[in-house]
Amino acid sequence: MQDDTPITKTLTLSSPGLKRALRYEMNNQFVVQVLGRSRFLLFPPDQAPLVHLHPRLHPYYRTAQLDVDAPDFVAFPDARHLHGALEVTLSAGDILFVPQIWLFHEVSLLDGGLSATVTVASDGDVKLATTDIFRTMLKVPDDATALERVTAYSRYIDHLLLLLRIDSAAFAKKIFVSKYAALKAELAISPQYEFVEQLCAAAVDDWRRKETALESHIFGQLQDAAKIAAEYARKLSPVGVRSDKYKVSAEGEMVLSDYVDVLLFNAVGGQHDLLIAFLEGCFRK
Image (cartoon, rainbow, N blue to C red; front, side, top):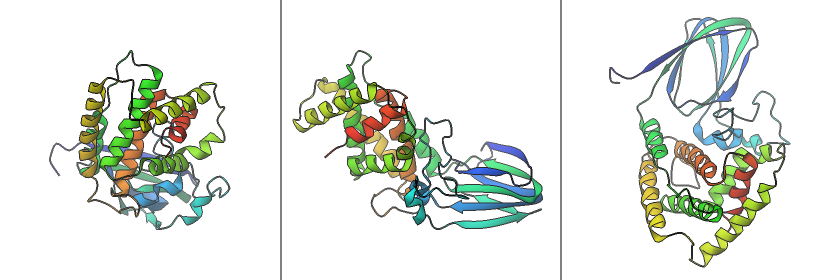
């Protein structure tokens, strides 16, 4: 580690029985138990789809929708397949290392406790690639029509995933199921939902005909930006636990999922029902 690596130190005072939601951080963390005891559950990154993380633009981003202490198997039936948990109880003087991107859940045990959490900013592949990927964004002209925006972003996402040998329809469905399906049941669907569905239908039809209303230089920029983002994403492929279905690592899938969340926002705005309409409508085969 270089001497100039930033270190954040956080002191947490916990009352008896206090729970912190299952979550993850982009940095490596050392948890030092000063007084009392705490119980931790840790899950590897490949379990992220089963805990149903909130979308990147949600107020509870990086936390799970699933309550691992009292799982709702009606809302999250696939959570029954959650596995690979490591359970650790810390007593005074113990230190726990939590790797970046790993999911962790903390419960302060009945005797209460004082814990000091030292977060060390990581300069590993995940952190660096994530920073680089999010610097790479498609630029659509301000005067582009709604159809042109939806067409451009759907093609950009598809091209990016194609470069990574990921099926866009399957990946879009995976994002929807893991992040948005339970939220959709609680959302009030706006009138714009149907409009986005119609835009996606038009964009998909236009795509199939190999025609577009956008100028050719926009698609040249689309392909160039997708190549850059894909190269950064490939940096994630050697690390962590690999998914059976996709070529990138589990960490890479988490980063790409967040990246797609931002692209959806740029395409149709920040309402979750419109993001859902885009996911469900723009990647049909």
